[in-house]
Length: 424
Image (cartoon, rainbow, N blue to C red; front, side, top):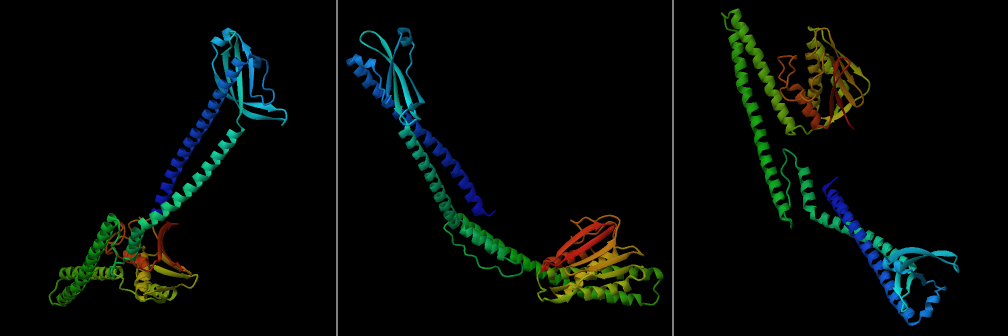
């Protein structure tokens, strides 16, 4: 959920609750006022009726039989002492309409000139009151819906305008690419906080780009500068090995230095390759036939590991063509196959599977590897080869990420399985 929807939703919920609370309070206030007005009407009617009764006592002998608006009942003095005036809602049967109608009833008592006490029951129809309450209720509902829609739409429009600089900044951040110039950013905004945020983001991007370029230049320069002294050392070691009078122990030392030097040269080349991949220097894309490439690499690896009696079996279950740099494709496939064969024991078999959208390499193993560590640079399995520089799978991971190729590792049935997934 984006920031605009999140903010608008929360504001709408708060406004919804406040409007509901206000509507409820307003409704009950209106009901109270209507009831109070009805009771006041009954109280005024009582004064009129009692006044007429005191002036014309004969009225006590008759009730309002037509509208049934009032009735008299004589009570004892004892009842009159403890009598309390009451108001309540009730219903009244109307014979002419053959139905009950809602009424408001008031019961009170009074004393006549001859010291006799009477109860007066006053009734007033509440049909008009109920109609008014119903009208008020629907008016509140309509007002509530209209106000909510207006507030929600208005808030969203305002928030869209307020958050526009933030949306532009996010779009700008998505366009940032390491190794490419920093795109221009419009830092003008009526909101001070957004102006500060834009300036800080632009400054950080420019500093990151500068650091990236410096790091890239340093790695390339260091790798190139190392090639010359490494070549000189190699030449000197060859001359030293050809020198007459070298003992067997000295030749062993020279051989160890050759092996170490070879690892340093390989490490230097791997670091330079990783730097070039990270810097996006491989931009060419051509259709690469992974079936043909896998066949060539399997044949080379069979020859290389023939002495250790490790065989590589190629299974083709489909044609796999990938758009990428051909040299990187060779490194990608070669590193996976070489890693599997290098970590296999004599007499074991490595299987390379090629399908329409997948490339998998499987070799025997005793326990699963840590999937969170195997693709890290310089990581080495404690039980693996000691001569490995720990960059083979890291290079595979970098190439896969460069071309958005899915890569997966799992341990199943006593086999390590490294799988590349090519999404169309």
